Length: 160
Ligand code: SME
Image (tube, rainbow, N blue to C red; front, side):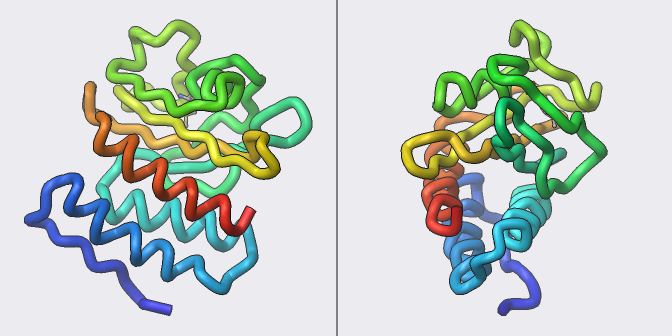
């Protein structure tokens, strides 16, 4: 296993994702443990992309429950349809929120979080977990994040 990730500071956002994703895939390949892989992915994204908060919420019965994350402490349980994460789970689709204050029902785990992107990963056709990435800047996420983070969720689905 590589001891550190290599991410070019000079690269633009797409370039950073392009450099990081194969390294993340290598990091989880051959390791079947869900917690270990999600923990390393959260760290790789947080430090590789310099995000404010990166974490996973796992579908457990009728709630999302906080899983491995990097960043300030966060809410532990989210109901289906609640907040951005619960809405992404209910709709089974990626949600990009440019301004969290403009998203009805947004759950503010940290007042420093200003924008976010939330993506589902599927097992047997159902949402099994949610990736939540937060920024302390408004409008920090766009189609580029959606494209590459959705690719990452397809990698996650290989070990779900
Ligand atoms: N903002 C999320 C809650 C999770 S925290 O941001 C880590 C939401 O509205 O679902």
